[in-house]
Every structure is written in structure tokens, then in C-alpha cells.
Amino acid sequence: MRGQRVVLERGTPAGSAGVALWPRYSILPVLPTLASPKLWTITLLAVVFACSSKERPPGRSHEAGSGAGVLRDAGSEPEGPPLPDAPGLCGNQIIEQNVDRPSLYFVLDRSGSMSERFEEGSFEKYATSVLAIRSVLRAIGHRVSYGAAVFPAFDSADDECATGEEVFAARPGDPLQYALDGEDGPVLKEFIQVLGTRPPGGGTPTSATLAALTPTLIEIEGKTALVLATDGEPNCNPDAICSGADCPWNVAHETTDDGRECGEDVNCCDPDIMEEGPLSCLDQPATLAALRELESAGIRSFVIGLPGSERFAEALDAMAEAGGTARSGGHAYFPVTSATELKDTLLGIGVSVAISCSIELSSPPPDPDLVNVYFDGRVVGSNAHDGWVLDGEALLDIRGSACEELKSGDVFQVQVVAGCPTVVI
Image (cartoon, rainbow, N blue to C red):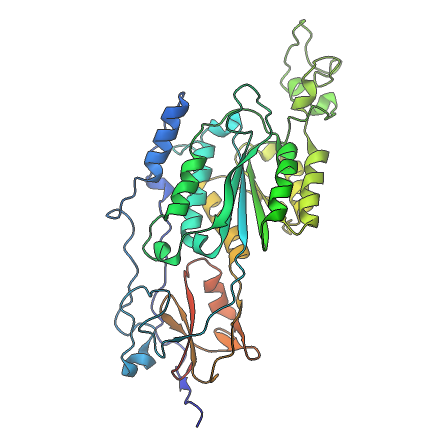
């Protein structure tokens, strides 16, 4: 005899699965201006690791009966965050999911202007970016692999245009339990420590960095998405050409070594006028070419414009187009003006890469009428519009509001469990 399906009326309490992303930038102290690289490193890392187990948000728990009313008779109400093998969930027979772990690769601008404040009362732009990435990886790091590069290279004091370098090779994030406990795992700790080892400085060698990273990025297994965060225009290309109207020296009315004023009659980005003048030109063609090469290899690039990049919005729009991630309406790239907006933008990008509402199961459930889906230990009812359905024998399709909740990033764990009557809403 086939299993009985249990029906819940719409409006049945479903409990709460909210997640607090930590830390909140509004309560963090302001980093001082740091002249010493060693002092800068120590201060950033002290802020990053200051959240002890006593300070972190408490682990989420479920009130008696929340989201599991029909399962109460089976004595299976979860009393806290579920472990990965789902003990205590009704049926307790886990249907494994085929997980194709994607990779998020962060390419961070650490040019001199990244030492400026992100916004009044906040950290420097570089430190703010690192902390925002940390917050996002706390939420989704267990779902992805991640790596990072910076430009210019860390050890580039004698060359402000040194090609950027990989500082953290892509690897799987920490296990789920760290996310459930609200802690940084060893992989995330190492990732943040590496990014915090040098203060900002130098130019913006974007095209050279992307070109140098391309072989490494192509070799990463599975789907890879690149996140490029910058506060200015790509430059540092000795072969770049620009008119006086597009030359920063001319815009600022600087003076050459021999006393000529950069202006209408003197293009200071002309190598015949200033030998290193081309390094200041907007390096758009080479940067777009590098992004197109990555896109043709299946690697999309999300472009985030940090405060200060507004003057180069047209160039950043073109970069997003070339990277295959142009947004419709408004700017094609992601302009951000606050630390909160940056964190939300990064989370949205990360979730879009890491989470799908179509989940492939490793095998069909033994009985499709004895299957339940859980978000962080809370049962999600089966419904063709706002729940889940089995599409075929082994494809779980999460729809409507349930899909929106999943893709909000507030759900750490999806579990498919067989053995009890399906909850239908």
C-alpha cells in the first residue's frame, strides 16, 4: 500500500530560519590610518578575529512544534540546528544530492586609493571589502570553493604597476557545521589572514592581472565565477594610448618636469612628453579583451565598482558586458556606496553562483509519497507553486516562495529525507 500523504493547510506556522550575518559594520570600530604594514596587518586581523564564541550570534533553534507539526506524532521534532546526516528528522533516510561545487574567485583592487575610507565612520575600502567577503563566505562558504588574487602584487613597493598575483588558491570551503555554529572555519581564517597581510598601495594593473590569472582560472574544476572589486579605472599598461582629454595628468592640470602645464596643447600621457605617461591612460581595450577571453572559457566576471569609481562608470559597464554579467536597466556593473550595500551585493552574487532551486538527487526516492524536504531542520511543504515537487524520478524542483527563501542565502542546509508521509501545503 502506498504511503499516506499528510496535508497542511496554508498558513500553518513554519518556524523561523533567519540568519544573522556577522559582523555588522555599523558597530565595528574605525580603523586608524596605518603607516606601518605590520601594524595594518595586526589591526585588521584583530578586528576580523575579535568575535569569540561568546560574542557570535547564538545557534538557531526551533521552538516546539515549529514547522514540524504533522511530524510530532513520530516524535521527530528537531530541537536545534540539524547535523549534516539529519538525525531526528522523520524517516531519517537521507536522499543524497549530487553537488557540483562551484568556485568563487575574488580579484581585489589594492591600489593606493583603496586606503581611503569607504564611507564616513567606516574602514578603509580594502579592509571593508575583505570583511564583506568574510561575512558572505560565512553564509555560503560551505557550498563553494573559493580563492583570491590581489592587484598590484603584495610585494610591489618598488613597482606600483606590478601585475597582480594569486594569494589564495581555490579550495573547498569549511564544512557546514562551522556555518551552523556561526564560526569561521580554518579555511576561512586562513583566507582572511592572507588577504590582510599588506596595506593598499600602487596602481591598478587590471588587464595584466586578468591575463596572468587566466590559465589558473581555466584549470579550476567545475563552474567558476570571478568577482572583480575595484575603485578606479584600469591603468598601468605601458602600451596604452589616450588623448589629452582622457589623461588624468591633463584633467588635474599637472606640470611636467620641464615646467610645461598638462592641458590642451600638452598631452602628458604621450610618451614623447612623459616617458611613463601611458601608464596613466585608461586601459580599456586590453581589459575588455582579457574579460572576453575568460567569458569564452565559461568564466563569467561580476564587476563591482567601489566608491571613487563613479567617474569611470562607462568603462565599468563595458567590463561587465565583456564579462558576461551585464545587468539590465541602470548600470551593467554593480555600483556600491556603503559597506552594507557591498555585503548585500556580494551575497547576491555568491548566492546566484552557489545555490540552485533545481536539485539533482543521486537516486530516486524509494516511495515518492514518503519524502520530505527540510530547510535547516524545518519541513518545507510540497506544493507546485510555493514549495517543492519531484520533477521526474530524481530531480527536486523548489518553487515560488520556497525558492526565494533558498536563494536569499538565509538557508544553510537543504535535506531530502525519505520514510515519512509527504507534507503537502
